[in-house]
Image (cartoon, rainbow, N blue to C red; front, side):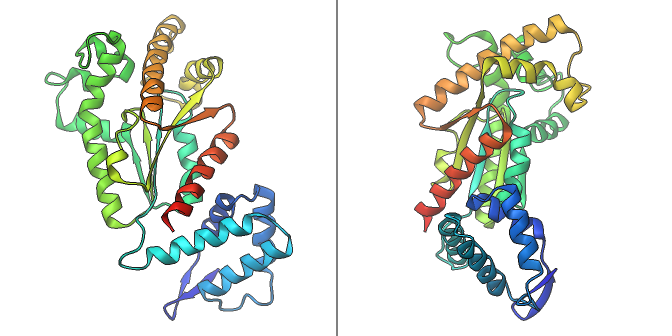
Length: 294
């Protein structure tokens, strides 16, 4: 499919339209039905972007869906962003300890936001490992729940596992902040995900930076943690059951620390039982932010 923008025909990704409809509140089935009926409409001939938007609004109104108000607000936000003095782009930061579901949630949100910038804190940690040797910074060359063996920082009353996590995060988080700030200046929508963000750390970036902490039940968290090697095919994850149990206990301590910080810093805590439910909770938070920005 192609649409006209500024008098030029360019390819238009249907995934972008699908994501916007899902963010507005449509189900997967409703979004698929809407796209099919719009694409087969006789009115869709060499459309401009505004023509496509009108067809979507008409379809939503015809089918009497309450999502029409959300879709209209998203369009208003996009138009406002085109102005020199318009609102900033939205950045969603998905936080939580290892194996809480952050990465898979991020993939879904990239589509819903039509975000073109993605920052993984694990990727940043890998880049830093290339800059700092294991000899100089051993706390960087291990998992967050193992860092305490090499270095500990933060209040002494905290558990050693948490203090090790803080020592590794103190190396990674400043780079995350720097990259996220650059994305905001660039004007691009983005998603940041990973363990190396202490809740509340992005408050300084402004009202368009949304922090959420993913919080599965302990039973679900343990199941996801124990199956991370088989599901993710990660060679860096131990296959020893006893070792993994100890590592899960350490991870729980990090998660509890992050939960306590989220409550203090008023960061949204997403209760996670299913991916669909978690994504819907975050989508609602995004829509609230859009309403506030326009």
